[in-house]
Length: 204
Image (cartoon, rainbow, N blue to C red; front, side, top):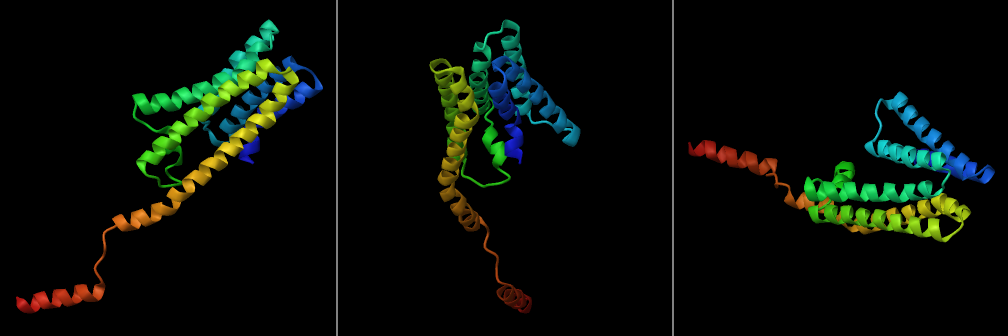
């Protein structure tokens, strides 16, 4: 359900474009993004930072599209968002020495430090690539093709990437419990401990 909720503005953008045009679709997506934020705040009194970033980007580029009546701006919106996410992930790692992917997932899984770094870099590479792919589709094909790709193509590529990540992490997730067990201190059996304490008392 959360997956569909996250796609809510994109789905409405696609439907509005099919029924009307790119400008109506842009306005609908903007309203949907605002409604999405309002609902999350009403329900949880908390909204993820990425949701705020997405809202800011779609308001800026969607607003520019409607004011200028130029679809170029809305075509750039996904790329700007992808590259902005990649910049945040890399900047946090390089400047602040903080792995944001690890911060989000460390409660769900235990991984070696080098794997967390590799995972963070792989997401940076994915978002940079997706930004380039969006520009290629947006400016090499009709707008109808781009709108379809925006919903089905980009979502499909994201799912494929996530599945590949899960398969890659499978080995480390299996090894993690064993590693934790090996590092844990070995407790002394109770019978042996009692015998050793009784022997010590007799010697006294």
